[in-house]
Image (cartoon, rainbow, N blue to C red; front, side, top):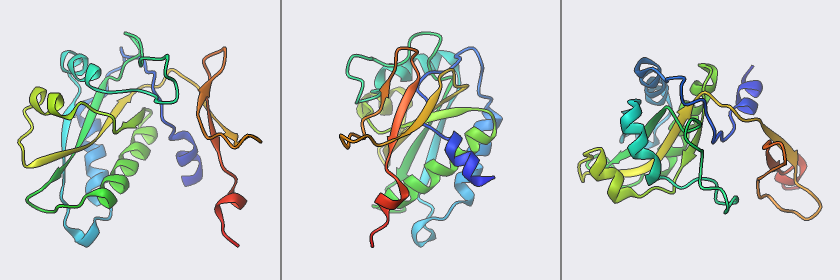
Length: 189
Protein backbone atom coordinates (compact mmCIF):
# COMPACT_ATOMS: atom_id res chain seq x y z
CA UNK A 1 0.00 0.00 0.00
CA UNK A 2 1.28 3.47 -0.85
CA UNK A 3 0.79 4.81 2.69
CA UNK A 4 3.03 2.06 4.10
CA UNK A 5 5.71 2.74 1.50
CA UNK A 6 5.68 6.47 2.30
CA UNK A 7 5.78 5.77 6.06
CA UNK A 8 8.83 3.50 5.59
CA UNK A 9 10.60 6.10 3.44
CA UNK A 10 12.40 7.98 6.20
CA UNK A 11 15.66 9.91 6.10
CA UNK A 12 18.02 7.07 7.04
CA UNK A 13 21.55 8.16 7.88
CA UNK A 14 23.16 4.90 9.03
CA UNK A 15 23.56 1.88 6.77
CA UNK A 16 25.15 -1.56 6.58
CA UNK A 17 28.02 -0.48 4.34
CA UNK A 18 28.84 -4.10 3.52
CA UNK A 19 25.53 -4.52 1.63
CA UNK A 20 26.05 -3.20 -1.90
CA UNK A 21 23.45 -1.31 -3.89
CA UNK A 22 23.75 -2.85 -7.37
CA UNK A 23 24.15 -0.58 -10.38
CA UNK A 24 21.03 -2.19 -11.85
CA UNK A 25 19.05 -1.02 -8.79
CA UNK A 26 20.38 2.53 -9.24
CA UNK A 27 19.40 2.42 -12.92
CA UNK A 28 15.89 1.26 -11.96
CA UNK A 29 15.60 4.21 -9.57
CA UNK A 30 16.56 6.57 -12.40
CA UNK A 31 13.89 4.79 -14.45
CA UNK A 32 11.32 5.78 -11.83
CA UNK A 33 12.54 9.38 -12.04
CA UNK A 34 12.19 9.23 -15.82
CA UNK A 35 8.54 8.20 -15.48
CA UNK A 36 7.78 10.97 -12.98
CA UNK A 37 6.09 14.24 -13.93
CA UNK A 38 8.34 17.04 -15.18
CA UNK A 39 7.45 20.76 -15.31
CA UNK A 40 6.56 21.62 -18.93
CA UNK A 41 7.82 18.09 -19.68
CA UNK A 42 11.30 19.56 -20.15
CA UNK A 43 12.93 16.57 -18.42
CA UNK A 44 16.03 18.61 -17.53
CA UNK A 45 17.44 16.36 -14.83
CA UNK A 46 20.43 14.07 -15.28
CA UNK A 47 21.94 11.67 -12.78
CA UNK A 48 25.45 10.58 -11.80
CA UNK A 49 25.46 7.11 -10.21
CA UNK A 50 28.11 6.02 -7.70
CA UNK A 51 28.29 2.57 -6.10
CA UNK A 52 32.01 1.79 -6.17
CA UNK A 53 33.22 1.55 -2.55
CA UNK A 54 36.36 3.57 -3.20
CA UNK A 55 34.45 6.36 -4.94
CA UNK A 56 31.75 6.32 -2.23
CA UNK A 57 34.50 6.86 0.35
CA UNK A 58 35.62 9.95 -1.59
CA UNK A 59 32.08 11.34 -1.91
CA UNK A 60 31.25 10.89 1.78
CA UNK A 61 33.35 13.76 3.26
CA UNK A 62 31.83 16.19 0.75
CA UNK A 63 28.40 15.87 2.42
CA UNK A 64 27.01 17.32 5.66
CA UNK A 65 24.76 15.16 7.80
CA UNK A 66 21.88 15.90 10.23
CA UNK A 67 21.92 19.62 10.94
CA UNK A 68 19.81 19.19 14.09
CA UNK A 69 22.44 16.85 15.55
CA UNK A 70 25.42 19.24 15.78
CA UNK A 71 27.63 16.82 17.73
CA UNK A 72 27.17 14.05 15.15
CA UNK A 73 29.51 14.22 12.17
CA UNK A 74 27.69 11.62 10.15
CA UNK A 75 27.76 7.85 9.96
CA UNK A 76 30.87 6.04 11.18
CA UNK A 77 32.88 3.73 8.96
CA UNK A 78 30.85 0.61 8.31
CA UNK A 79 27.60 2.62 8.51
CA UNK A 80 28.15 4.89 5.53
CA UNK A 81 26.13 4.82 2.30
CA UNK A 82 26.92 2.09 -0.22
CA UNK A 83 25.77 4.24 -3.15
CA UNK A 84 24.88 7.76 -4.22
CA UNK A 85 22.72 9.30 -6.89
CA UNK A 86 23.76 12.85 -7.69
CA UNK A 87 20.81 14.76 -9.16
CA UNK A 88 21.88 17.32 -11.75
CA UNK A 89 20.03 20.07 -13.58
CA UNK A 90 20.95 20.46 -17.24
CA UNK A 91 21.15 24.24 -17.70
CA UNK A 92 20.97 23.83 -21.47
CA UNK A 93 17.45 22.43 -21.08
CA UNK A 94 16.11 24.66 -18.27
CA UNK A 95 17.14 27.25 -15.70
CA UNK A 96 14.65 26.09 -13.05
CA UNK A 97 14.65 22.62 -11.51
CA UNK A 98 13.00 22.85 -8.07
CA UNK A 99 9.74 21.12 -8.97
CA UNK A 100 11.36 18.26 -10.90
CA UNK A 101 14.11 17.82 -8.33
CA UNK A 102 11.67 17.14 -5.50
CA UNK A 103 9.30 14.96 -7.48
CA UNK A 104 12.04 12.78 -8.93
CA UNK A 105 14.01 12.53 -5.69
CA UNK A 106 10.90 11.32 -3.86
CA UNK A 107 10.10 8.83 -6.63
CA UNK A 108 13.61 7.38 -6.33
CA UNK A 109 13.50 7.29 -2.53
CA UNK A 110 10.19 5.41 -2.59
CA UNK A 111 11.69 3.01 -5.14
CA UNK A 112 14.71 2.49 -2.89
CA UNK A 113 12.46 1.52 0.02
CA UNK A 114 10.47 -0.79 -2.23
CA UNK A 115 13.77 -2.47 -3.25
CA UNK A 116 14.77 -3.04 0.40
CA UNK A 117 17.04 -0.02 0.75
CA UNK A 118 16.73 3.41 2.30
CA UNK A 119 18.37 6.76 1.98
CA UNK A 120 18.68 10.39 2.75
CA UNK A 121 18.34 13.43 0.49
CA UNK A 122 21.29 15.74 1.07
CA UNK A 123 21.36 19.34 -0.03
CA UNK A 124 24.34 20.36 2.07
CA UNK A 125 27.08 19.40 -0.38
CA UNK A 126 30.54 20.74 -1.21
CA UNK A 127 29.51 21.26 -4.81
CA UNK A 128 32.85 22.45 -6.24
CA UNK A 129 34.72 19.46 -4.82
CA UNK A 130 32.00 17.00 -5.83
CA UNK A 131 31.99 18.45 -9.36
CA UNK A 132 35.75 17.95 -9.58
CA UNK A 133 35.71 14.46 -8.06
CA UNK A 134 33.00 13.16 -10.40
CA UNK A 135 34.12 15.17 -13.46
CA UNK A 136 30.71 16.83 -13.77
CA UNK A 137 30.69 19.36 -16.64
CA UNK A 138 29.82 22.98 -15.80
CA UNK A 139 26.53 22.86 -17.73
CA UNK A 140 25.07 20.67 -14.94
CA UNK A 141 23.96 22.25 -11.68
CA UNK A 142 24.40 19.93 -8.70
CA UNK A 143 20.98 19.91 -7.02
CA UNK A 144 20.84 17.06 -4.51
CA UNK A 145 22.70 13.93 -3.49
CA UNK A 146 20.74 10.82 -2.54
CA UNK A 147 22.73 8.68 -0.11
CA UNK A 148 21.58 5.06 -0.32
CA UNK A 149 22.12 1.77 1.44
CA UNK A 150 20.63 -0.91 3.67
CA UNK A 151 19.38 0.97 6.78
CA UNK A 152 20.67 -0.13 10.19
CA UNK A 153 18.80 2.40 12.27
CA UNK A 154 15.26 2.73 13.49
CA UNK A 155 13.45 5.93 12.58
CA UNK A 156 10.11 6.67 14.24
CA UNK A 157 7.56 9.40 13.68
CA UNK A 158 6.40 11.25 16.79
CA UNK A 159 3.74 13.94 17.13
CA UNK A 160 5.12 17.45 17.54
CA UNK A 161 5.34 18.10 21.26
CA UNK A 162 3.80 20.89 23.29
CA UNK A 163 6.91 23.02 22.75
CA UNK A 164 6.22 22.98 18.99
CA UNK A 165 9.74 21.78 18.10
CA UNK A 166 10.11 19.97 14.79
CA UNK A 167 13.79 19.15 15.41
CA UNK A 168 14.59 15.47 15.03
CA UNK A 169 16.62 13.80 17.79
CA UNK A 170 18.11 10.51 18.94
CA UNK A 171 17.37 8.75 22.19
CA UNK A 172 19.77 6.71 24.34
CA UNK A 173 19.20 3.61 22.17
CA UNK A 174 20.06 5.68 19.05
CA UNK A 175 16.48 5.51 17.79
CA UNK A 176 15.98 8.50 15.50
CA UNK A 177 12.79 10.46 16.35
CA UNK A 178 11.14 12.72 13.76
CA UNK A 179 8.35 15.02 15.02
CA UNK A 180 5.53 15.50 12.52
CA UNK A 181 2.66 17.97 12.67
CA UNK A 182 -0.88 16.55 12.82
CA UNK A 183 -3.15 16.45 9.78
CA UNK A 184 -5.49 18.93 11.51
CA UNK A 185 -2.60 21.37 11.92
CA UNK A 186 -1.81 21.17 8.19
CA UNK A 187 -5.33 21.85 6.93
CA UNK A 188 -6.54 25.46 6.97
CA UNK A 189 -10.17 25.95 7.96
